[in-house]
Each structure stands twice: as structure tokens, then as C-alpha cells.
Amino acid sequence: MQQHERRIVRIENIVKDFRPGFGLRVKRVLHGISLDVNDGEIFGFVGPNGSGKTTTLKVLMGLIRATSGEATILGHSVTETAFRREIGFLPENPYFYSHLTGREILGFFAKLSGVTRGRRKARISELLEWVGLDHAADSRLETYSKGMLQRLGIAQALVHDPRVVFLDEPMSGLDPIGRVEIRDLVLRLRSEGKTVFMNTHILHDVEMLCDRVAIIVEGRIRYQGVIEDLVGSGLHEVDIVAANLSPETVLELEDRLAAKLRGVGERVEIRVAEKEVNDTLRCVLAAGGEVVSVTRHRVSLESFFLSTVEGGSEIGE
Ligand SMILES: Nc1ncnc2c1ncn2[C@@H]1O[C@H](COP(=O)(O)OP(=O)(O)O)[C@@H](O)[C@H]1O
Ligand SMILES: [Mg+2]
Image (cartoon, rainbow, N blue to C red; front, side, top):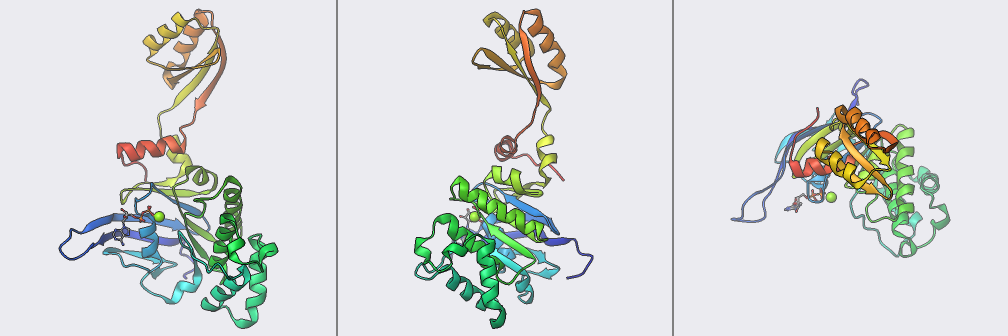
């Protein structure tokens, strides 16, 4: 690792074709994707199911070969193996032997990852505590909840203290508490200086956690950048909440401003473009209505994401 290299992961124009079998048509799953992950960030690789996230991660982990293109981690081509001790990996559906205990499993992976015998015991205790499983260290995995198994999976990815950690859907299938626990662990990883690459389709987690994201849809990157730029790039709209409006006024507003109106109890929420705010307020007041609040509407990651997926538009850097 060169000191000056800030880009921890680089993917350049990766294409992946699967050949289903003799005589069958080639299926292109990745259509030339490119992205960069910077040192010390939590990077979210976001997309609907089947968009190519796991395939990309398998290319990065050297589990499958790209059809063309190049990918490097810490300056090494992913086709090399020597640098693998610098990276940790939590697969999508980690499989652990259920009759073993958490401590035994970590011992197994520590040995595989080349943690020296002398360090192993202390490292495993440290990790079990770090992921909050010290109380269950000597229980068999068949007694673990899904959240506990996922935390064990993260501990497994960290046994050899890697610099970069790759997580494939770490929060999927977890209840809200389990998700918060994993989220905390991911944030702690960053605070300890690690770089995290995370595949996910759960947008709320992305908003809470990620410094930068890439959105992949059907094997193509639709956006790459910081989330604030992404949600800020939508049209600016303003939500006005008004009260005491007669049905006639509501209809008139709808006609005149082509505004989106929504009744909320006695109140009406009016979403208008920024330039129509003053007109709308005048209209409300002139009709004897009362303005309750005026707030800028923040385009959520979710609505942006849906419009990207449906509209097929290409936005961003
Ligand atoms: N070994 C394979 N052979 C053929 N098609 C595959 C193979 N692995 C994945 N795919 C296809 O590639 C697409 C992307 O899958 P995947 O990378 O798992 O998506 P994601 O992780 O975003 O849900 C899917 O259409 C999937 O069916
Ligand atoms: Mg996947």
C-alpha cells in the first residue's frame, strides 16, 4: 500500500457475462461499471435485488473473474491473493456450523486467516466483546438469533484486523434492534479507521451510515457521489400547511397553481415549486385561510432512488 493512495477500491469498466451453458445466450450482468472507494469512508453500494451487487463483490473478492475491466484493492489487482489479509469479507448468507460455539467458529476462521496461535485466544475474546457476544461465546450457534449470527459474521470478517471490510447486505433480514446493532458496529469500524464497502438495498440504513454511495440498476451505475448532493439535486419544492380553507378555495388552488394538495385532518398540505410560494400564500390568506407552516421539501433518498430506477436517468458525477 502506497502512502499516497487515497482510493482504497477502484473498479474500472468491469463487465461480467455469465454463460448459462452450451448453446445458451450469454447473460450480461455487469455492463462496464466503474467506481472508487476512498480511505476511511463507509461506501454504500445500493440497488434493487438482482442489480449486480453481489456479483461485483464476488469479483472484488476474487471469487469470480470479470469478463473484462480492472479492479484493484489497496493498489493490488483483485486477481492477486497476497494482499487478502488486508481485507475482511462478510458474505450475503454466511454459513456456520450450528453445533459449534461462537468462540470455536472464530477460532477456526482465525486459524484460516493466519492469526498466530499465541495471539488467537486474546484476539477472539476481544472480538466477541467488540460485537457484544461475550455472554454467548460458549453457546452453540443453533441458539443464536439472526442478529447474533450476523454480528458473529462481522467478527469473523475482522479476525485478522483488516484495513478494508466488505459486507454484503449486513442488515437484511434483521429486526429493528438487530439493524441498529449492526449499524453501530459499522460506525465503530469507521471510527477505528477502517474503510467499509457495504452492499445493501435498505435505503434508510444508507442514509444513516454512508459517506458516499453508488446506485446500481440492472448492472449499470446510475449515480455515484455523496448522498446530500443526490437528494439535493431534485427540484426544489416547498410544503405549505394551511388551515381554515373552504373546499372552493382548495379547488381554486389546485386549478391555479397546478399544486399538489393533500388533506391532513382539518389542514391542507400544499406542495409547490419554490417560485410559486408567494402566490400560494397570498391565495391562502386572501381566502381567509391560515398559514400553519412553510418548509422546504427534502427529496428523500427513497423517492430519488425510485425515480432513478423507474426513469432510467443517469445523474451525478
Ligand atoms: N452464476 C450465475 N449465473 C447466471 N446468472 C447469475 C449468476 N449469479 C448471478 N446471476 C444473475 O446476475 C444478476 C445479478 O445478481 P446479483 O449480483 O446476485 O444481484 P444483487 O446482489 O444486486 O441482488 C441476477 O439477474 C442473477 O440472477
Ligand atoms: Mg446480493
